[in-house]
Length: 373
Image 1 (cartoon, rainbow, N blue to C red):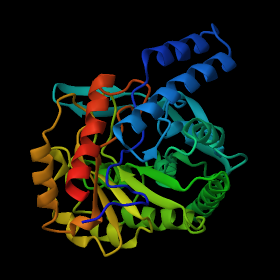
Image 2 (image 1 turned 180 degrees about the vertical axis):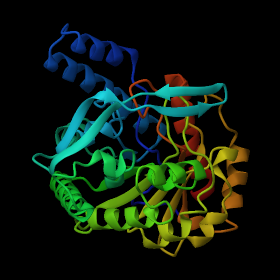
Image 3 (image 1 turned 30 degrees about the vertical axis):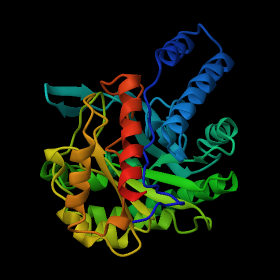
């Protein structure tokens, strides 16, 4: 067993971190016109400097800005693409937790123009992270997968007068993503993570039924999304590590989809051209480790064994036993460890304290050190 000097690291994390109350207050004040954009930016800088120090202090090597400049892990990116409009209406999604169901109502979107990229999305945020981090770690950028521009609305969200043929939509979207990847590469990004819910959602029969309702092909949509993501990453710069995170939903400690990765695993592990996979295995709704039997040589799976949804701290022995269970299906040198998801995919964040978050990140590093050295 060996340590890793390239991403994904033996001890890693998905990316988003809890927003401190001071930043939540600053965002509210900015929305009400109480502070300027410069004052909000200064508040973000302060909060990001703090979460960078947190990550470094617990021993992480891949360092994010906690996504603290975003309101949403994906929509803040998608709305910046040319051809995507934010609608006044809102979509409604049902999330589940141990206490029952809650509703999430993000703003809706529509593709009503040609998809393109006029500027580097999150470019300023990434260079700011690099400035704050310096040479103390590797700056990691997270962006949503191209499938997120399509999954929730499907064909109905794409104006037929602009794209009568979906092939043209996908071609333009892939080109925009290739441009984005090239641009962040020029800024020095060497660790890019593509966040995707569709691959995990499509394991859930209810989600496959939903795909059919919005005009998709539930039997083959994951294969189509793999092809589109591969096309989007086709020209990635030499030396850029790319990982994919497959999430079942993360909003205020709640989730959407359930079920193991069995439905998508063979195509996902063998055909998706990324270096590593961040995958959720934090509880019984995540299924077993059997899908890991499809992992080919050279690919890395980051086991999300430590939940970001609940404050209770897992024990080292339990985590080590689960890592051992995973090794029945894949070599231990092809495994790494992380929390199961981000701690704050949206501004609201999960039901943990900053101290709980720090304890879980520290636990990831300590267990990884003890297992892999």
